[in-house]
Length: 278
Ligand SMILES: [Zn+2]
Image (cartoon, rainbow, N blue to C red; front, side):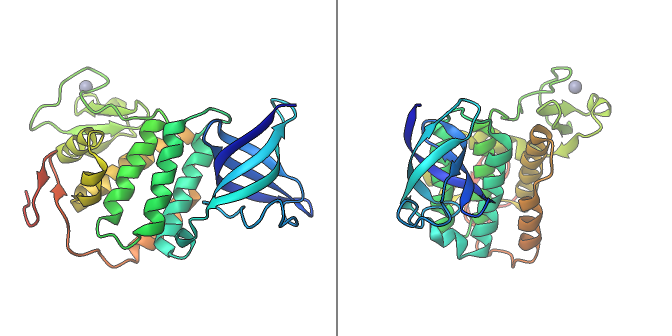
């Protein structure tokens, strides 16, 4: 009976009987794993406050059968990320990312880069929820997580006819093909929607940004809107479902006051200084 010990984030948990919990973890070496915590609701010695959503923990357990739930015996807290739960905007965004991992990750497929990205996302949500480029950072995290899940959008030419991106042409994004289609091919892709050249350039450039620039960057409202629409259409297509947490997050964002004082703005693939606009 192979024993396991690993670091993991608490991604989901549900009651199971009077004292057990079904706990979904995203672990450093095994990716997403469904586990059962026997007596987890009662034992404070083996599970000392370590089962809250977003928490980073070390767990001990064993795998009885490859198809069975991994049984965990104890769970020790490393980092609770409690501040995420105390700020509504961070909490709703955090739940959205948890749902992406829950719905889009296959079981027991190690993805160390995704584990590290989850750590970056939770650290961001726990420490700087009032950051002035909060929405831009969330868009960049969406793009990063989509890329690490293997859904990176193809944005260099029309995936139908191969036509290059030309100035003056309209391009559309087709979630079904995972990339762009030109205006001539668009009628064959009824779910495709228009995406501007600025957003295409931004998404192509975003993969090359370092963390320092990510923290300073801000998007125009159009780029932000189109980027969100594109990423969410891709996630919906690959998962086959609507994300409940996304609706709640969007409803909350609609009621928010706009965030003032934009930082550097990216519109057409170039970083522009403050107060510069196209
Ligand atoms: Zn085409």
